[in-house]
Image (cartoon, rainbow, N blue to C red; front, side, top):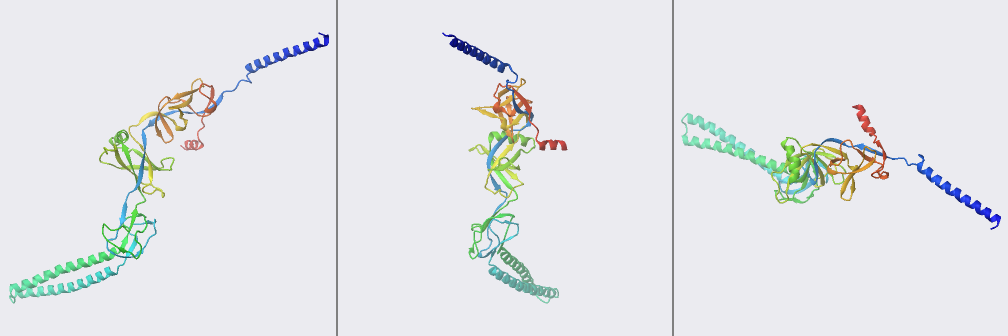
Length: 389
């Protein structure tokens, strides 16, 4: 090998040795340098609290009107006028329909004429009775003749009562030609319009229907176990179970209610008992017949750990929460779930009160990793309320 080639080989070998040494130094520096070590992930936690709770159960029911009236005519006749619009709110006593009053006005006039005639007859009979009493006292007429006059006066008085009753009946029939609202509420459409003949009686076609709309019932069925566990203990203690109602599209249960009645027996076929809750505050869109979501909360209260329901995760068929333990490491705890208390979930086991349950940041902090735990900031509204108190 000539000298220039040997020199080039020596330079290349030295370069390779220096490059290898540089790589080893860089690796060692990167592994040991504090600047190259990744900082622990930051997670936000909320402390699990322990407080008194009571069990609850959700049911599906139906809204029902407190009062429902099928309006029927009490007298037959021809419908003259409909005085309302379909679906409007009416008050008790409002005029709804007018049936042709002419026949009933004629009956009233006839009854008035009959009453006048009977009054005259009764006045004459009373006069004859007074005269007969004077004559019998003077022994001017026979006792039999006086008895005839006295009987005529009594008959006239009875006929007068009958004539007055007939006039009252005729006047009542005339009043019934004006059909008025028996209750306040929302009215349906008119089933019989002007010009049609109306038939009276309980078997006749209803003219319309009125349902009360200021208060509603929510009716639902409670299974035997829930009745014994939730309702019976409250009733024994003289307390009312807490009931809240929502519509099918409500995320929560915004309408408070109270138990109005519990059926007098358990239905052995379905194993349920019928419960009716009363809503004293309703919104305009709540109609009888709509599906109602009912949350029943009652029974004997007990102390339990609660966390926000959003903190509970699912791993196949197991429920868990992530906590930060005393070594500032993320730990997955399997939990046994209790009932839902609004947005709070009762944990029957798995987490102790005071545990730091991770709210945010868990996606980059798997179980076993070391983290920096930061307490969740209290909402501004809560701070304001606390300041007022």
